[in-house]
Length: 160
Length: 160
DNA sequence: TATGAAAGACATCATGT
DNA sequence: ACATGATGTCTTTCATA
Image (cartoon, rainbow over all chains, first blue to last red; front, side, top):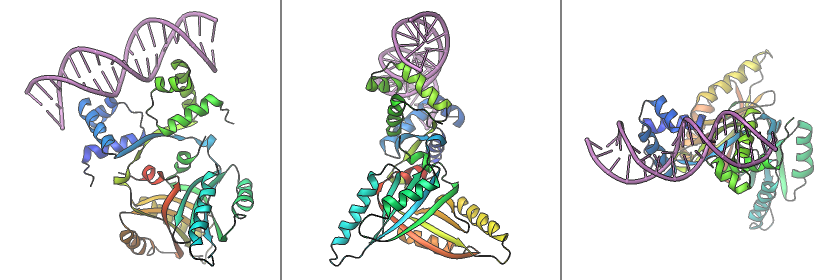
């Protein structure tokens, strides 16, 4: 479906590190003419290989305490209600500003990535805002510390 | 620690959506002179509020099946060995290209975000590459489907 | 810190190899 | 895929408030 050659990949890698590199800088580093780099990036955008450009926010704006929350919904008497439970939970979580990401997990579960300024606030948030949602059967909290890979994930997700 | 006014926040929000907006476009949208926008962005970069610029890769390069893996390490006879177990697990996972993120979780656990082209390949990868690591006590797989928030997380993390 | 104006750098496009 | 040149736009800097 996607055909990328070495040059495409090299360009993508450079832009991933620093999307503000100018075409001439990229051209110089890869020893190719500017016109070629320009053409390639244009194509990568047209093909949707590059979806969009964005910024990663620094430490000062990032929550200091983050955790994954695994939420299992109650099994309703009427089976069709499960979908309603799930979509209610997901929508409610999505609205909250310190919920960084929400995804469904299997038939009856939802996973959320949450962040707060401190551990205390995070625990308070989980107890007072998440655990009180209706139709929950089980809530597991998986704290995340010390990222070894994907560290700037939080700086990418955090809103301002 | 960080002092952001409304203009800073407005700029950050625009850049988060599209970091290729030119200074003049931003200036126009926010009804401020270009030099002011330029000055603000410069300051945001200097202060590290904006950490860096990057690209988000599109669907074609993203793994179709992603899951969180919760890994608990064995409790060693000699307590000091736990740290060695954990750091071995984390380092090993980090090297793998389809492991998108790795973080520690508490004393004896690690969480990894993994992605593969298909569910089959993902399960195969988990069985053949993750579960066979030494010193594991417990491995929980939490599949992620249908992101409702933070959807382009995968396009942000995926490598090329 | 904000602004306006000027200078230089850059992206973009057309054309041809 | 690469080269070149023309064009308009954008960034950057600086003097000033």
